[in-house]
Length: 156
Image (tube, rainbow, N blue to C red):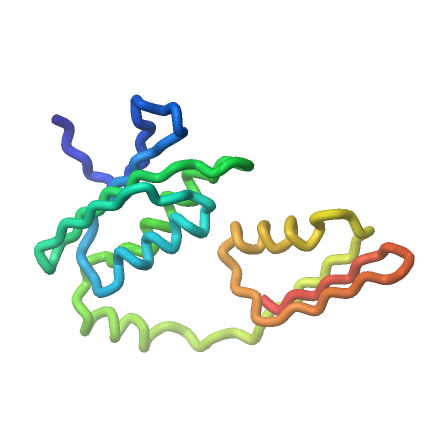
């Protein structure tokens, strides 16, 4: 039996006729943690076949059996980092509140303008790249001219 020190591990199962993976997560417990982690798995296009959650109120161990959907396979390293971000880091709530209060004030949104020729799937590709970069889009203005030119503006 091997001892894992990773917070998140993703394994390929031997019975891979359905392209099944097992995602194991071990981290401090928090309210709604299972739902948040399930949402991340679903956002990556994975189908959750089975889930097992064990907790003692302080520490949580989750095992998800997921199936790859048809299409582009997920970027496993990005999935692993997103799951690790969702896991609490174990600091107590008072120090977390102090850290939150000491964060610098928010900067005004940045305007990203993309000018290109229109093609099928252009907006999907742009939004996918912004999602992978973990940016928050506050507002978008999408314009396509009759001549086929695109001018997209994103407030991020």
